[in-house]
Each structure stands twice: as C-alpha cells, then as structure tokens.
Image (tube, rainbow, N blue to C red; front, side, top):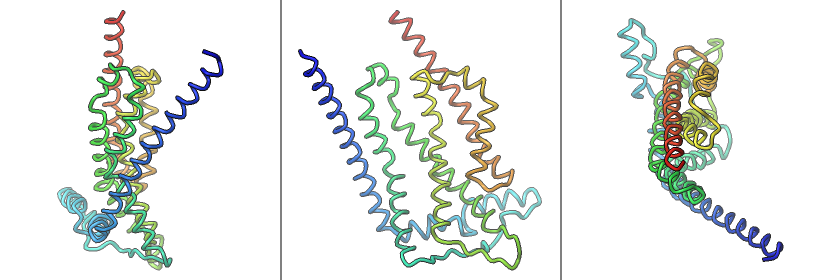
Length: 276
C-alpha cells in the first residue's frame, strides 16, 4: 500500500472517530434538552419547592441545625424568616432564570445518560481487562455525583444563604438580591459539590494511566488538605464552622481515593505478574 493510501486510511479513521463523537454529543444534548423541558413544565415545583426551599425557615437543614444549636445552648439558625427579598430587575430576568434553571436541572437528571455516552465513546479504546475492571463506573460515578449535589443543596446552600442573607454592614442597608444572583448561588453550590464528589473516580483513572500513585497522594496529603480548605472557602461563606462542615466529607473522599489508588496499583501488579 502506498504512503498516500495509508495516510488516507488514517484520515478516514480519524474522521469516523469525530463522527462517532458528534453523535454521542448529539444524543447527550437531546437527553438534557428533553429533561430540561420536563423541568420547564414543572416550574412551580422547581422554583417554589427546590430553588426557594433554602430561603424558608421550614427547610430541613435549618430545623436540624436549630435543634442542634439549642442542645448546645445557642439560638443560631432559629428564625422565622430570612431578612432579604429576591427580585428581578430586568424585563427578561424571570424568563431567562426559568430557561437556565431548567437546563441545569436537565443536565443533573441526565447525568447518568451523559456519562454512559462518554463511556461508550471511550471504552472501545480500552483493553478488555480494563473494561472489566471499570465495570460499574457509570453507577458509581452517578451515585457520587447525586450525593454531591444533595450535599451541596442541603448543606452548602443553606449555610451560604443563611450567612450571606443575614450579613449586614449597617442597619440602613436592606438586602434585595437579584434573582440571577440567588439562583446562581444555589446552582454553584449544588453543581460544584457534585463535581467535587467525583474525586475518587478522577483518582481512579489518573492512577490507571500512571499519573498518580498512593505514595504520591500520601506524600502530598497536607498540601491536598490546604487545597480542600481553599475550595471549601470558595463554595461556602467565610466562617470556620461552615468551612469545616464542607471540608470533612471532601477529606474523607481524599482518603477513600488513596485506598482506591492503592487497589488499582495492586491489581495492575497482579496482572503484570500473571502475564509476565
């Protein structure tokens, strides 16, 4: 076969690869749009119950924190109403918030399917033993993502809203928050927590490709702790209690990641001896 023919085959193979990727992206987008449409229809539930839930004193997290504080002799998180209002100051503000909130909800709900499309695109390039060892990847990754989203919604979001919504530099200043700002906070807390909880999955694949080892993770544990605290400070209000509440599960995830990395290395060494 001539060199030109070889190059042509390589080019066609590459184009076919891009075509396959395009269809995976199209199917993922369709899934997100369909579920976003469902979320758009159920506007009252999405906004009144979910989005504005952390603004109400009856939110489960506030009740739990109030009872815990009372047991310790404090009255923190015990209130009847948060002292701020949410307003829309642009003509298309509420409609735009409705659209983007629906898209966010669609992405969260479609996450397992999007992950499945990603896996279907990547898995043919893996060896059969690698595909077997990664069995259950979609279930575990989706579960971690949903746990992270729930953690962000029920823990990070109310802590942030309670702190920022009650913070005042003067009694003469009243908090009137823009709708996009409020929804942006809820969205950022939920999605960032969901992605952070994917840490064990990320470490698993970094270990598989040889970029991370258990020794590396243990050696730089103290630096990782500093990074965790920085991340906690970014996604939570600037008070120590909130940062610790968020940092603890992330530190636990880091320790779990070390165990996972160790298990991957052990399996790789075992396979190397078997084939050696």
